[in-house]
Length: 277
Ligand SMILES: Nc1ncnc2c1ncn2[C@@H]1O[C@H](COP(=O)(O)OP(=O)(O)OP(=O)(O)O)[C@@H](O)[C@H]1O
Image (cartoon, rainbow, N blue to C red; front, side, top):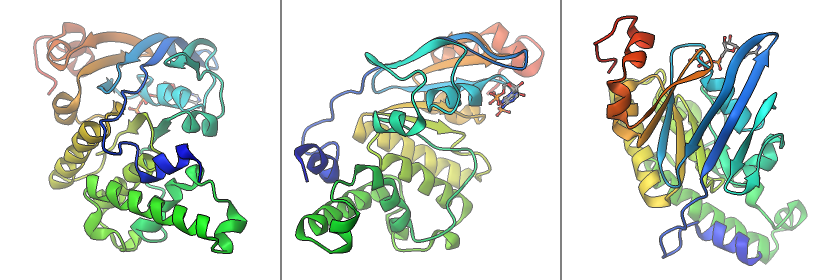
């Protein structure tokens, strides 16, 4: 295990507070689908260590923006940068390796225990190699143990410790969705893209997930870009909010500024002067 892997296996934080991640810059990004402008010169910056929410009505372009950031779509024009590192046009696994991890709206986890699923999230960080692991060489055994310790810490941070050895198929919907969240964290990202993390959850599950996001942000110091329709959650967690509508930036500011913005009220409710939250 080299020094970097050892640090990651121990945990990104160690005893010292984590170094702040670089800012994530989206600059004038345009994506078109057969003439439809899904994103028209959209710009936003996720400040280091902040929670930035991306909101907007259905079809506004939020998922398209996530797909550009995670490398699934290549923009027609514009750039994405993590600090000085160009992410535009890189393959998804390269972007993940540079520290930008994402979750998806739909649950994909159905097999294995919570621990198994979180260990899968460590795969990209594993240095020992298949042969060394299969032969149980001491180096590989040490690395596996360090990864498992870290995975247990992440399970604690995300409220999954009690379910660590439980098959995911036996978990509630909310817990399974939180396994996806925890698995993305197992990559030790510097920026986490959360796509509707509480969609379909009941009130108690939403509260647990909101707590987990706040805990992760406070303890790991990473930046979060959050797409979510639950305005209560957005207003509670976000430092900054960008509002998209028909692929354009409608408003940007603090949750309070955005909540009072007349264009936002119009886009959400079709009437001025009412609160969307
Ligand atoms: N692969 C695609 N091919 C064609 N059109 C697409 C594609 N993906 C998205 N669009 C269109 O681009 C626009 C933006 O869609 P997008 O899914 O990004 O919106 P959204 O804000 O994420 O919506 P929702 O809240 O419903 O998920 C929509 O008009 C959508 O129909």
